[in-house]
Length: 111
Image (cartoon, rainbow, N blue to C red; front, side):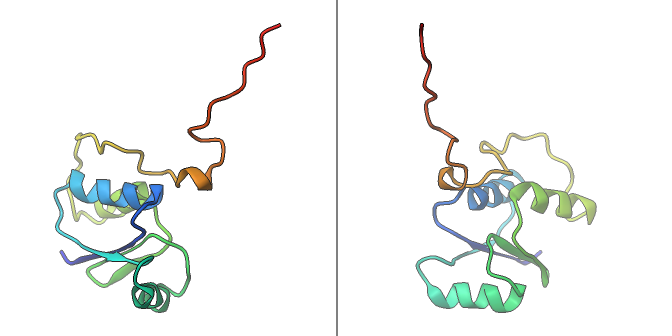
């Protein structure tokens, strides 16, 4: 299986995709779309849109996808067998800046 993953170096969605690849011990080419503008341009051209992550598996582009969705695609298409291994990170979450309240302490008022 040939896998190319267009990812951001620091991103919850990208971390989820990496975790799926590790969970299933899959070799993949990680393509940095932040530090290399030409990689971002390639992703946009291939996927037809500008959101990431995008994962290309054997020529099929999965655009703007979470790790959870990548795993579901691979299971549905029998590219991997179900694994009970823990991915170690959430497969369906963006970065903290994508969810402003995630990871922040809540104010508790004591009266």
